[in-house]
Image (cartoon, rainbow, N blue to C red; front, side, top):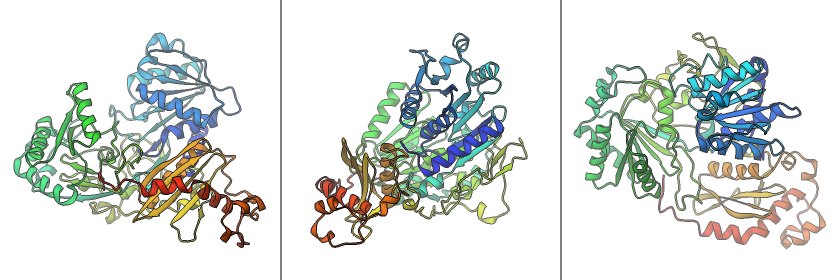
Length: 558
Protein backbone atom coordinates (compact mmCIF):
# COMPACT_ATOMS: atom_id res chain seq x y z
CA UNK A 1 0.00 0.00 0.00
CA UNK A 2 1.16 3.54 -0.82
CA UNK A 3 0.75 6.70 1.24
CA UNK A 4 -0.59 9.86 -0.38
CA UNK A 5 2.06 12.56 -0.88
CA UNK A 6 0.61 14.64 1.98
CA UNK A 7 0.61 11.58 4.24
CA UNK A 8 4.28 10.99 3.37
CA UNK A 9 5.12 14.57 4.39
CA UNK A 10 3.15 14.07 7.62
CA UNK A 11 5.13 10.90 8.37
CA UNK A 12 8.50 12.53 7.58
CA UNK A 13 7.78 15.52 9.82
CA UNK A 14 6.57 13.29 12.66
CA UNK A 15 9.63 11.01 12.47
CA UNK A 16 11.91 14.07 12.39
CA UNK A 17 10.23 15.60 15.46
CA UNK A 18 10.43 12.31 17.36
CA UNK A 19 14.14 12.16 16.62
CA UNK A 20 14.67 15.73 17.84
CA UNK A 21 12.34 15.85 20.87
CA UNK A 22 11.59 12.23 21.79
CA UNK A 23 7.86 13.03 21.63
CA UNK A 24 5.50 14.84 19.32
CA UNK A 25 1.83 15.47 18.59
CA UNK A 26 0.52 15.52 15.00
CA UNK A 27 -2.91 16.93 14.15
CA UNK A 28 -4.92 15.72 11.16
CA UNK A 29 -8.52 16.60 10.29
CA UNK A 30 -11.24 14.08 9.54
CA UNK A 31 -10.71 12.50 6.11
CA UNK A 32 -6.90 12.58 6.17
CA UNK A 33 -6.36 8.90 6.90
CA UNK A 34 -4.56 9.23 10.21
CA UNK A 35 -4.63 5.45 10.75
CA UNK A 36 -2.49 5.05 7.63
CA UNK A 37 -0.19 7.84 8.81
CA UNK A 38 0.20 6.14 12.21
CA UNK A 39 1.20 2.95 10.42
CA UNK A 40 3.69 4.90 8.31
CA UNK A 41 5.41 6.51 11.29
CA UNK A 42 5.52 3.25 13.26
CA UNK A 43 6.89 1.32 10.29
CA UNK A 44 9.62 3.93 9.67
CA UNK A 45 10.81 3.75 13.27
CA UNK A 46 10.75 -0.07 13.44
CA UNK A 47 12.31 -0.66 10.04
CA UNK A 48 15.68 -2.41 10.14
CA UNK A 49 15.72 -2.92 13.91
CA UNK A 50 14.29 -5.16 16.61
CA UNK A 51 12.46 -2.24 18.25
CA UNK A 52 9.00 -2.75 19.77
CA UNK A 53 5.95 -0.45 19.58
CA UNK A 54 2.51 -0.19 21.15
CA UNK A 55 -0.44 1.65 19.57
CA UNK A 56 -3.12 2.77 22.06
CA UNK A 57 -6.81 3.27 21.30
CA UNK A 58 -9.83 3.74 23.55
CA UNK A 59 -12.42 1.78 21.55
CA UNK A 60 -12.51 -1.82 20.22
CA UNK A 61 -13.29 -0.75 16.66
CA UNK A 62 -10.29 1.62 16.60
CA UNK A 63 -7.94 -1.14 17.77
CA UNK A 64 -9.14 -3.53 15.05
CA UNK A 65 -9.06 -0.78 12.40
CA UNK A 66 -5.54 0.28 13.34
CA UNK A 67 -4.21 -3.29 13.16
CA UNK A 68 -5.88 -4.00 9.81
CA UNK A 69 -4.51 -0.90 8.10
CA UNK A 70 -1.11 -1.28 9.75
CA UNK A 71 -0.75 -4.69 8.09
CA UNK A 72 -1.47 -3.14 4.67
CA UNK A 73 1.27 -0.54 5.09
CA UNK A 74 3.74 -2.82 6.93
CA UNK A 75 3.06 -6.42 5.80
CA UNK A 76 6.36 -7.75 7.18
CA UNK A 77 5.97 -6.42 10.76
CA UNK A 78 4.22 -8.81 13.16
CA UNK A 79 1.30 -7.59 15.31
CA UNK A 80 -0.57 -8.63 18.43
CA UNK A 81 -3.52 -7.46 20.53
CA UNK A 82 -4.10 -6.51 24.18
CA UNK A 83 -7.80 -6.10 24.95
CA UNK A 84 -10.49 -7.67 27.11
CA UNK A 85 -10.39 -10.95 25.13
CA UNK A 86 -6.69 -11.29 24.29
CA UNK A 87 -3.49 -10.16 25.98
CA UNK A 88 -0.53 -10.86 23.75
CA UNK A 89 2.70 -8.88 23.35
CA UNK A 90 4.34 -11.29 20.88
CA UNK A 91 4.10 -8.90 17.89
CA UNK A 92 6.67 -6.19 17.22
CA UNK A 93 3.70 -3.82 17.20
CA UNK A 94 0.96 -4.40 19.76
CA UNK A 95 -2.45 -2.73 19.52
CA UNK A 96 -3.84 -2.14 22.99
CA UNK A 97 -7.13 -0.99 24.48
CA UNK A 98 -6.47 1.74 27.05
CA UNK A 99 -9.13 0.63 29.61
CA UNK A 100 -7.62 -2.86 29.59
CA UNK A 101 -3.93 -1.97 29.58
CA UNK A 102 -4.30 0.74 32.25
CA UNK A 103 -5.10 -1.88 34.91
CA UNK A 104 -2.10 -2.52 37.15
CA UNK A 105 -2.14 -6.28 36.53
CA UNK A 106 -1.84 -5.72 32.77
CA UNK A 107 0.69 -2.91 33.06
CA UNK A 108 2.94 -5.24 34.99
CA UNK A 109 3.29 -7.49 31.94
CA UNK A 110 3.98 -4.63 29.49
CA UNK A 111 7.47 -5.16 27.95
CA UNK A 112 10.08 -2.50 27.28
CA UNK A 113 8.80 -0.31 24.44
CA UNK A 114 10.76 1.84 22.02
CA UNK A 115 7.69 3.66 20.69
CA UNK A 116 4.32 4.42 22.29
CA UNK A 117 1.67 5.67 19.84
CA UNK A 118 -1.52 7.34 21.10
CA UNK A 119 -4.46 7.42 18.71
CA UNK A 120 -7.11 10.07 19.55
CA UNK A 121 -4.32 11.74 21.55
CA UNK A 122 -6.59 14.47 22.96
CA UNK A 123 -7.27 11.87 25.67
CA UNK A 124 -3.56 11.60 26.56
CA UNK A 125 -3.82 13.78 29.69
CA UNK A 126 -6.43 11.50 31.28
CA UNK A 127 -5.34 9.42 34.27
CA UNK A 128 -5.60 6.04 32.50
CA UNK A 129 -3.37 7.23 29.64
CA UNK A 130 -0.88 8.83 32.02
CA UNK A 131 -0.50 5.55 33.92
CA UNK A 132 0.46 3.81 30.68
CA UNK A 133 2.80 6.60 29.57
CA UNK A 134 4.50 6.76 32.95
CA UNK A 135 5.01 2.98 33.04
CA UNK A 136 6.44 2.97 29.50
CA UNK A 137 8.89 5.72 30.51
CA UNK A 138 9.80 3.87 33.71
CA UNK A 139 10.57 0.74 31.69
CA UNK A 140 12.53 2.73 29.10
CA UNK A 141 13.34 6.42 29.73
CA UNK A 142 14.22 6.76 26.02
CA UNK A 143 10.81 5.58 24.77
CA UNK A 144 9.40 7.84 22.04
CA UNK A 145 5.79 9.05 22.49
CA UNK A 146 3.79 9.88 19.35
CA UNK A 147 0.23 11.21 19.45
CA UNK A 148 -2.26 11.81 16.64
CA UNK A 149 -5.64 13.53 16.87
CA UNK A 150 -8.11 15.56 14.85
CA UNK A 151 -9.28 17.57 17.88
CA UNK A 152 -6.44 18.43 20.29
CA UNK A 153 -8.51 20.87 22.35
CA UNK A 154 -11.28 18.46 23.29
CA UNK A 155 -11.68 15.35 25.45
CA UNK A 156 -11.12 15.96 29.18
CA UNK A 157 -10.12 19.62 28.50
CA UNK A 158 -6.75 19.13 30.18
CA UNK A 159 -3.76 20.59 28.36
CA UNK A 160 -1.51 18.16 26.50
CA UNK A 161 1.71 20.04 27.33
CA UNK A 162 2.72 17.58 30.12
CA UNK A 163 2.83 14.80 27.50
CA UNK A 164 3.98 16.57 24.32
CA UNK A 165 6.51 19.39 23.99
CA UNK A 166 5.89 20.12 20.31
CA UNK A 167 3.56 19.67 17.32
CA UNK A 168 5.15 18.03 14.28
CA UNK A 169 2.50 18.85 11.70
CA UNK A 170 -1.11 19.97 11.31
CA UNK A 171 -3.28 19.07 8.33
CA UNK A 172 -6.10 21.58 7.99
CA UNK A 173 -9.59 20.96 6.67
CA UNK A 174 -8.84 23.24 3.72
CA UNK A 175 -6.02 20.99 2.51
CA UNK A 176 -8.34 17.98 2.43
CA UNK A 177 -11.05 19.93 0.64
CA UNK A 178 -8.52 21.07 -1.95
CA UNK A 179 -7.31 17.51 -2.46
CA UNK A 180 -10.83 16.13 -2.95
CA UNK A 181 -10.97 14.13 0.30
CA UNK A 182 -13.67 16.34 1.86
CA UNK A 183 -16.42 18.43 0.29
CA UNK A 184 -16.36 22.21 0.85
CA UNK A 185 -18.73 23.86 3.34
CA UNK A 186 -20.87 26.78 2.19
CA UNK A 187 -21.60 28.65 5.41
CA UNK A 188 -24.32 31.23 6.04
CA UNK A 189 -24.38 33.28 9.23
CA UNK A 190 -28.02 34.15 9.87
CA UNK A 191 -29.28 36.48 12.60
CA UNK A 192 -32.81 35.58 13.69
CA UNK A 193 -32.80 38.23 16.41
CA UNK A 194 -30.68 36.30 18.90
CA UNK A 195 -27.06 37.25 18.16
CA UNK A 196 -26.84 40.26 20.51
CA UNK A 197 -28.32 38.26 23.39
CA UNK A 198 -25.98 35.32 22.69
CA UNK A 199 -22.96 37.61 22.86
CA UNK A 200 -23.73 38.26 26.54
CA UNK A 201 -23.87 34.55 27.52
CA UNK A 202 -21.08 33.66 29.91
CA UNK A 203 -18.82 30.62 29.64
CA UNK A 204 -19.07 27.76 32.10
CA UNK A 205 -16.03 25.59 32.87
CA UNK A 206 -16.00 23.83 29.49
CA UNK A 207 -18.26 25.85 27.21
CA UNK A 208 -20.93 28.52 27.09
CA UNK A 209 -23.75 28.23 29.65
CA UNK A 210 -26.18 26.12 27.62
CA UNK A 211 -29.11 26.87 29.96
CA UNK A 212 -28.66 30.54 29.15
CA UNK A 213 -28.43 29.68 25.46
CA UNK A 214 -31.64 27.66 25.78
CA UNK A 215 -33.42 30.67 27.29
CA UNK A 216 -32.51 32.69 24.19
CA UNK A 217 -32.82 30.13 21.37
CA UNK A 218 -35.63 27.84 22.57
CA UNK A 219 -38.48 30.00 21.34
CA UNK A 220 -41.10 29.19 18.73
CA UNK A 221 -40.54 32.33 16.56
CA UNK A 222 -36.81 31.59 16.35
CA UNK A 223 -37.38 27.92 15.49
CA UNK A 224 -39.93 28.90 12.84
CA UNK A 225 -37.36 31.26 11.30
CA UNK A 226 -34.75 28.47 11.36
CA UNK A 227 -37.07 26.12 9.45
CA UNK A 228 -37.93 28.85 6.94
CA UNK A 229 -34.27 29.58 6.19
CA UNK A 230 -33.50 25.82 6.04
CA UNK A 231 -36.29 25.25 3.49
CA UNK A 232 -34.94 28.09 1.37
CA UNK A 233 -31.28 27.03 1.38
CA UNK A 234 -31.17 23.28 2.13
CA UNK A 235 -34.66 21.81 2.20
CA UNK A 236 -33.76 18.81 0.03
CA UNK A 237 -30.74 17.72 2.14
CA UNK A 238 -30.24 15.33 5.02
CA UNK A 239 -29.45 17.58 7.95
CA UNK A 240 -27.90 17.40 11.43
CA UNK A 241 -28.93 20.05 13.98
CA UNK A 242 -26.88 20.94 17.09
CA UNK A 243 -28.97 22.26 20.00
CA UNK A 244 -28.21 23.60 23.48
CA UNK A 245 -30.38 21.37 25.72
CA UNK A 246 -32.60 18.29 25.46
CA UNK A 247 -35.73 20.44 25.83
CA UNK A 248 -34.49 22.71 23.04
CA UNK A 249 -33.76 19.70 20.80
CA UNK A 250 -37.18 18.17 21.48
CA UNK A 251 -38.96 21.40 20.54
CA UNK A 252 -36.89 21.79 17.37
CA UNK A 253 -37.60 18.19 16.34
CA UNK A 254 -41.33 18.60 17.00
CA UNK A 255 -41.42 21.85 15.02
CA UNK A 256 -39.80 20.22 11.98
CA UNK A 257 -42.25 17.31 12.26
CA UNK A 258 -45.23 19.67 12.55
CA UNK A 259 -44.06 21.32 9.34
CA UNK A 260 -44.23 17.97 7.53
CA UNK A 261 -40.52 17.13 7.71
CA UNK A 262 -39.41 13.73 9.01
CA UNK A 263 -37.22 14.36 12.08
CA UNK A 264 -35.55 12.41 14.89
CA UNK A 265 -33.56 13.20 18.01
CA UNK A 266 -30.59 11.74 19.93
CA UNK A 267 -29.06 12.91 23.22
CA UNK A 268 -26.59 11.74 25.86
CA UNK A 269 -28.96 10.14 28.39
CA UNK A 270 -30.87 8.26 25.71
CA UNK A 271 -30.81 4.46 25.89
CA UNK A 272 -28.13 2.86 23.70
CA UNK A 273 -30.59 0.69 21.77
CA UNK A 274 -33.02 3.57 21.20
CA UNK A 275 -30.23 5.85 19.99
CA UNK A 276 -28.94 3.14 17.64
CA UNK A 277 -32.44 2.67 16.18
CA UNK A 278 -32.81 6.40 15.45
CA UNK A 279 -29.37 6.56 13.82
CA UNK A 280 -30.15 3.52 11.67
CA UNK A 281 -33.39 5.08 10.43
CA UNK A 282 -31.50 8.27 9.59
CA UNK A 283 -28.81 6.24 7.83
CA UNK A 284 -31.46 4.63 5.61
CA UNK A 285 -32.73 8.08 4.62
CA UNK A 286 -36.13 7.66 6.28
CA UNK A 287 -35.40 10.63 8.56
CA UNK A 288 -34.34 13.88 6.90
CA UNK A 289 -33.46 15.97 9.95
CA UNK A 290 -31.55 14.61 12.95
CA UNK A 291 -31.49 16.85 16.03
CA UNK A 292 -28.90 16.20 18.76
CA UNK A 293 -27.38 17.53 21.97
CA UNK A 294 -23.62 16.96 22.34
CA UNK A 295 -23.80 13.41 20.92
CA UNK A 296 -22.79 13.70 17.28
CA UNK A 297 -19.92 16.17 17.74
CA UNK A 298 -17.27 13.48 17.28
CA UNK A 299 -16.95 9.74 16.66
CA UNK A 300 -19.90 9.59 14.24
CA UNK A 301 -20.15 10.09 10.49
CA UNK A 302 -22.95 9.75 7.96
CA UNK A 303 -21.65 10.44 4.46
CA UNK A 304 -24.89 11.70 2.85
CA UNK A 305 -25.35 14.44 5.49
CA UNK A 306 -24.92 17.67 3.55
CA UNK A 307 -26.40 20.32 5.83
CA UNK A 308 -25.36 21.31 9.36
CA UNK A 309 -27.47 23.66 11.49
CA UNK A 310 -25.79 25.36 14.47
CA UNK A 311 -28.36 26.48 17.05
CA UNK A 312 -25.77 26.82 19.80
CA UNK A 313 -22.48 28.71 20.06
CA UNK A 314 -19.20 26.96 20.87
CA UNK A 315 -16.39 28.44 22.93
CA UNK A 316 -13.80 26.18 21.27
CA UNK A 317 -13.07 26.59 17.58
CA UNK A 318 -12.23 22.88 17.42
CA UNK A 319 -15.78 22.10 18.59
CA UNK A 320 -17.23 24.22 15.80
CA UNK A 321 -14.98 22.52 13.25
CA UNK A 322 -16.04 19.10 14.57
CA UNK A 323 -19.72 20.00 14.22
CA UNK A 324 -19.20 21.31 10.67
CA UNK A 325 -17.06 18.25 9.92
CA UNK A 326 -20.06 15.92 10.35
CA UNK A 327 -21.20 17.12 6.93
CA UNK A 328 -17.91 17.18 5.02
CA UNK A 329 -17.39 13.47 4.27
CA UNK A 330 -17.45 12.42 0.62
CA UNK A 331 -19.87 9.65 -0.39
CA UNK A 332 -19.04 6.06 -1.30
CA UNK A 333 -21.50 5.24 -4.15
CA UNK A 334 -21.41 1.54 -3.30
CA UNK A 335 -22.57 2.26 0.25
CA UNK A 336 -25.11 4.94 -0.69
CA UNK A 337 -26.25 4.33 -4.31
CA UNK A 338 -27.67 7.39 -5.99
CA UNK A 339 -26.37 9.94 -3.48
CA UNK A 340 -24.50 12.81 -5.15
CA UNK A 341 -22.72 15.21 -2.81
CA UNK A 342 -20.72 18.24 -3.92
CA UNK A 343 -20.73 20.48 -0.83
CA UNK A 344 -22.20 20.96 2.64
CA UNK A 345 -24.41 23.90 3.61
CA UNK A 346 -23.80 25.21 7.14
CA UNK A 347 -26.49 27.42 8.64
CA UNK A 348 -25.11 29.21 11.71
CA UNK A 349 -27.90 30.84 13.72
CA UNK A 350 -25.58 31.49 16.67
CA UNK A 351 -22.26 33.28 17.07
CA UNK A 352 -19.64 30.56 16.51
CA UNK A 353 -18.61 31.80 13.06
CA UNK A 354 -18.46 35.41 14.28
CA UNK A 355 -16.42 34.37 17.32
CA UNK A 356 -13.93 32.08 15.61
CA UNK A 357 -13.74 33.59 12.14
CA UNK A 358 -13.88 31.68 8.90
CA UNK A 359 -12.46 28.19 8.49
CA UNK A 360 -10.09 29.50 5.82
CA UNK A 361 -8.08 31.65 8.25
CA UNK A 362 -5.86 28.70 9.20
CA UNK A 363 -5.57 27.36 5.66
CA UNK A 364 -3.01 27.71 2.91
CA UNK A 365 -5.48 28.60 0.17
CA UNK A 366 -3.43 27.30 -2.72
CA UNK A 367 -3.41 23.86 -1.10
CA UNK A 368 0.35 23.42 -1.43
CA UNK A 369 2.35 21.96 1.41
CA UNK A 370 6.13 21.97 1.23
CA UNK A 371 8.19 18.92 2.00
CA UNK A 372 10.71 18.67 4.80
CA UNK A 373 10.29 19.82 8.42
CA UNK A 374 7.39 22.16 9.09
CA UNK A 375 8.22 25.80 9.81
CA UNK A 376 7.47 26.43 13.47
CA UNK A 377 6.90 29.15 16.04
CA UNK A 378 6.94 29.08 19.83
CA UNK A 379 3.71 29.30 21.80
CA UNK A 380 4.06 32.19 24.31
CA UNK A 381 1.82 30.40 26.79
CA UNK A 382 3.35 26.89 27.02
CA UNK A 383 6.59 27.38 25.01
CA UNK A 384 5.76 24.45 22.72
CA UNK A 385 7.02 24.40 19.13
CA UNK A 386 3.98 24.43 16.81
CA UNK A 387 3.56 24.77 13.01
CA UNK A 388 3.75 28.32 11.72
CA UNK A 389 0.20 28.32 10.29
CA UNK A 390 -1.46 27.32 13.58
CA UNK A 391 -3.77 29.99 15.07
CA UNK A 392 -4.69 27.93 18.16
CA UNK A 393 -2.03 26.01 20.11
CA UNK A 394 -2.99 22.31 20.10
CA UNK A 395 -1.23 21.77 23.45
CA UNK A 396 -2.54 24.58 25.67
CA UNK A 397 -5.34 26.24 23.64
CA UNK A 398 -3.55 29.60 23.37
CA UNK A 399 -4.98 31.77 20.55
CA UNK A 400 -2.58 33.52 18.18
CA UNK A 401 -4.30 36.70 17.11
CA UNK A 402 -3.62 38.32 13.75
CA UNK A 403 -3.62 42.00 12.90
CA UNK A 404 -5.15 41.25 9.51
CA UNK A 405 -8.72 42.50 9.25
CA UNK A 406 -9.61 39.64 6.92
CA UNK A 407 -9.18 37.17 9.78
CA UNK A 408 -12.13 38.74 11.61
CA UNK A 409 -14.62 38.48 8.78
CA UNK A 410 -17.51 36.00 9.16
CA UNK A 411 -17.94 33.13 6.76
CA UNK A 412 -19.83 33.91 3.58
CA UNK A 413 -18.57 30.99 1.52
CA UNK A 414 -15.61 28.62 1.39
CA UNK A 415 -13.28 29.44 -1.47
CA UNK A 416 -10.54 26.96 -2.24
CA UNK A 417 -8.36 26.59 -5.28
CA UNK A 418 -8.02 23.08 -6.66
CA UNK A 419 -4.81 21.18 -6.07
CA UNK A 420 -3.37 19.65 -9.20
CA UNK A 421 -3.74 16.04 -8.12
CA UNK A 422 -2.35 14.81 -11.40
CA UNK A 423 1.04 16.28 -10.54
CA UNK A 424 0.96 15.06 -6.95
CA UNK A 425 -0.07 11.51 -7.80
CA UNK A 426 2.49 8.71 -7.60
CA UNK A 427 1.09 7.44 -10.91
CA UNK A 428 1.08 8.83 -14.42
CA UNK A 429 -2.41 9.72 -15.67
CA UNK A 430 -3.20 9.45 -19.37
CA UNK A 431 -5.77 11.60 -21.14
CA UNK A 432 -7.13 8.81 -23.36
CA UNK A 433 -8.75 10.84 -26.11
CA UNK A 434 -7.21 14.31 -25.73
CA UNK A 435 -10.42 15.96 -24.52
CA UNK A 436 -9.90 15.64 -20.71
CA UNK A 437 -13.09 13.57 -20.44
CA UNK A 438 -11.44 10.20 -19.74
CA UNK A 439 -8.24 9.72 -17.71
CA UNK A 440 -6.69 6.37 -16.75
CA UNK A 441 -3.70 5.33 -14.64
CA UNK A 442 -2.17 1.85 -14.32
CA UNK A 443 -0.27 -0.01 -11.65
CA UNK A 444 0.94 -3.62 -11.76
CA UNK A 445 -2.06 -4.90 -9.79
CA UNK A 446 -4.77 -2.25 -10.16
CA UNK A 447 -6.01 0.45 -12.49
CA UNK A 448 -8.40 3.36 -12.11
CA UNK A 449 -9.92 6.11 -14.21
CA UNK A 450 -12.29 9.06 -14.18
CA UNK A 451 -14.91 9.52 -16.90
CA UNK A 452 -17.17 12.50 -17.63
CA UNK A 453 -20.75 11.80 -18.74
CA UNK A 454 -23.95 13.87 -18.68
CA UNK A 455 -22.65 16.65 -16.47
CA UNK A 456 -20.78 14.69 -13.83
CA UNK A 457 -17.64 12.67 -13.24
CA UNK A 458 -17.47 8.95 -12.47
CA UNK A 459 -14.49 7.34 -10.75
CA UNK A 460 -13.99 3.63 -11.51
CA UNK A 461 -11.38 1.16 -10.32
CA UNK A 462 -10.44 -2.46 -10.98
CA UNK A 463 -7.46 -4.76 -11.47
CA UNK A 464 -6.14 -8.29 -11.39
CA UNK A 465 -8.60 -10.33 -9.34
CA UNK A 466 -10.22 -7.03 -8.33
CA UNK A 467 -13.83 -6.36 -9.29
CA UNK A 468 -14.40 -3.32 -11.49
CA UNK A 469 -16.63 -0.98 -9.51
CA UNK A 470 -17.65 2.65 -8.97
CA UNK A 471 -15.39 4.56 -6.56
CA UNK A 472 -17.07 7.98 -6.53
CA UNK A 473 -19.45 10.22 -8.46
CA UNK A 474 -19.82 14.00 -8.69
CA UNK A 475 -17.07 16.62 -8.74
CA UNK A 476 -13.87 16.03 -10.72
CA UNK A 477 -11.54 16.59 -7.77
CA UNK A 478 -13.41 14.16 -5.52
CA UNK A 479 -13.48 11.51 -8.24
CA UNK A 480 -9.78 11.92 -9.03
CA UNK A 481 -8.92 11.65 -5.32
CA UNK A 482 -10.93 8.42 -5.04
CA UNK A 483 -9.25 6.97 -8.15
CA UNK A 484 -5.77 7.85 -6.88
CA UNK A 485 -6.57 6.38 -3.45
CA UNK A 486 -7.66 3.12 -5.11
CA UNK A 487 -4.24 2.81 -6.74
CA UNK A 488 -2.48 3.75 -3.48
CA UNK A 489 -4.46 1.10 -1.63
CA UNK A 490 -3.60 -1.69 -4.07
CA UNK A 491 -0.10 -0.81 -5.23
CA UNK A 492 3.34 -0.44 -3.61
CA UNK A 493 6.33 1.88 -3.98
CA UNK A 494 7.79 -0.55 -6.51
CA UNK A 495 4.75 -0.31 -8.78
CA UNK A 496 4.37 3.48 -8.51
CA UNK A 497 6.39 3.99 -11.64
CA UNK A 498 5.61 7.59 -12.55
CA UNK A 499 9.25 8.52 -13.07
CA UNK A 500 10.46 5.27 -14.66
CA UNK A 501 12.33 5.76 -17.94
CA UNK A 502 10.47 2.98 -19.76
CA UNK A 503 7.22 4.96 -19.51
CA UNK A 504 8.25 7.09 -22.45
CA UNK A 505 9.64 4.28 -24.60
CA UNK A 506 7.85 3.53 -27.86
CA UNK A 507 4.81 1.31 -27.97
CA UNK A 508 5.64 -2.37 -28.41
CA UNK A 509 4.62 -4.46 -31.43
CA UNK A 510 2.53 -6.74 -29.21
CA UNK A 511 0.62 -3.77 -27.78
CA UNK A 512 -0.14 -2.52 -31.30
CA UNK A 513 -1.69 -5.90 -32.16
CA UNK A 514 -4.40 -5.35 -29.55
CA UNK A 515 -5.01 -1.64 -30.15
CA UNK A 516 -7.69 -0.33 -32.56
CA UNK A 517 -6.39 0.34 -36.13
CA UNK A 518 -6.45 4.14 -35.74
CA UNK A 519 -3.67 3.97 -33.13
CA UNK A 520 -1.31 1.85 -35.21
CA UNK A 521 -0.16 4.87 -37.23
CA UNK A 522 0.48 7.03 -34.14
CA UNK A 523 4.28 6.97 -34.08
CA UNK A 524 4.41 9.18 -30.98
CA UNK A 525 2.48 6.70 -28.84
CA UNK A 526 4.42 5.59 -25.74
CA UNK A 527 4.42 2.21 -24.05
CA UNK A 528 2.55 3.59 -21.02
CA UNK A 529 -0.07 5.42 -23.10
CA UNK A 530 -0.68 2.19 -24.97
CA UNK A 531 -1.00 0.37 -21.65
CA UNK A 532 -3.66 2.86 -20.50
CA UNK A 533 -5.56 2.54 -23.78
CA UNK A 534 -5.48 -1.25 -23.52
CA UNK A 535 -6.73 -1.10 -19.95
CA UNK A 536 -9.68 0.94 -21.17
CA UNK A 537 -10.21 -1.35 -24.16
CA UNK A 538 -10.23 -4.54 -22.06
CA UNK A 539 -12.55 -3.00 -19.44
CA UNK A 540 -14.67 -0.85 -21.74
CA UNK A 541 -17.83 -2.93 -21.36
CA UNK A 542 -17.71 -2.83 -17.55
CA UNK A 543 -16.84 0.88 -17.48
CA UNK A 544 -19.62 1.75 -19.93
CA UNK A 545 -22.14 -0.30 -17.97
CA UNK A 546 -21.24 1.41 -14.68
CA UNK A 547 -21.34 4.92 -16.15
CA UNK A 548 -24.55 4.51 -18.16
CA UNK A 549 -26.36 2.74 -15.33
CA UNK A 550 -25.18 5.00 -12.52
CA UNK A 551 -28.07 6.14 -10.28
CA UNK A 552 -29.60 9.46 -11.22
CA UNK A 553 -29.09 10.99 -7.79
CA UNK A 554 -32.59 10.30 -6.48
CA UNK A 555 -31.15 10.68 -2.96
CA UNK A 556 -29.13 13.72 -3.95
CA UNK A 557 -27.15 15.09 -1.01
CA UNK A 558 -26.11 18.31 -2.70
